[in-house]
Image (cartoon, rainbow, N blue to C red; front, side, top):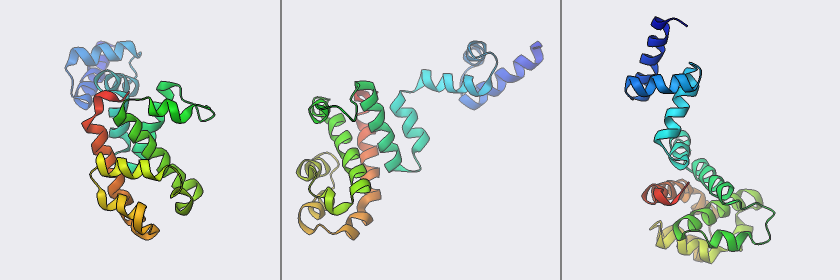
Length: 174
């Protein structure tokens, strides 16, 4: 590749990533002049996995929440077949454990239905929603009213509050 083309690619990467030319050139060299790979490398250097997931899935907060929970479980080596799964999740830092518990409960709602999910760790989920996410009206609906229509109307606000919670505790996440 000639110097003019290499400089052009460097300028493109620097502009797209918002980094200096030296950083862009270093990442292009590391990734054999592949612009997309260089941009991914710069992101990996600048952002944690959780930050990258939040950036990528921000348009769908619940999807972002599920991806972050999966990243935590994978990093901690907590498999779905683990006999001690609940205990290992509870042993995580409390904000991380609460977020994973909420994500798993929301997934359970999708898998088994709302009525079944009301009997799956609902007290702990409601306590997390009230205490950490500051949404007592959502928790009250889960514990008292148990109205699925109301819950579905509140679900997007719940997921958005969970993402804000993750951002406040970003240092605890992978």
